Amino acid sequence: SQTIHQWPATLVQPVGSPLSLECTVEGTSNPNLYWYRQAAGRGLQLLFYSVGIGQISSEVPQNLSASRPQDRQFILSSKKLLLSDSGFYLCAWRTSGTHNEQFFGPGTRLTVL
Amino acid sequence: GQQLNQSPQSMFIQEGEDVSMNCTSSSIFNTWLWYKQDPGEGPVLLIALYKAGELTSNGRLTAQFGITRKDSFLNISASIPSDVGIYFCAGTYRPSDYKLSFGAGTTVTVRA
Image (cartoon, rainbow over all chains, first blue to last red; front, side, top):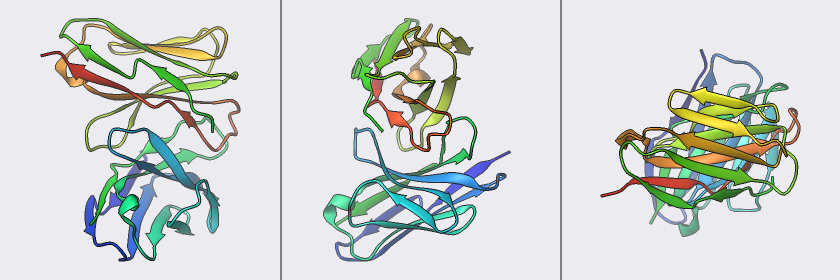
């Protein structure tokens, strides 16, 4: 069966510091991968998605970037965090080419101080 | 993707009650999905619908794909305290679509 991992689970970072959040998927190959952000009490905002290694599509211009160095690894980064980057970051995967169901990871709670 | 209209925005449940929420789109969808998110966790897929008129159950949850293909409904029967959380609808037009359109969520809380 497939599983999706995210780490760290929680992170507190000062403004201006770098960021690296990691997401890995097990039990599937060539998945579509997604990064979402969720502000407190709000809906899901798609940040990036990837259909293959090295292929990144950005949905919202911002202070963040994404990379996919391996088939089942998706990384969210920032060189300098802003206060507005605080939120709950969710990674999701989908089997490419079939149904549209996306499956979410446990999330990373990021607080920028 | 486009934003879906999900209602109500929030609701209070009393144990044993049946509750319902719905989601509408301005355009036709061919896939409707319902997720539940517990506090501090990622959303979990509850039900997936792929055919207009389809009615699918998952335990006490029942979801329907509207005949017009522009809406979907989720019903929870005989509510229990662990039903609290945020319920999201999502949908797409084409099976090949990479992105889902999401509703803003319905927050379900236990009535004191």
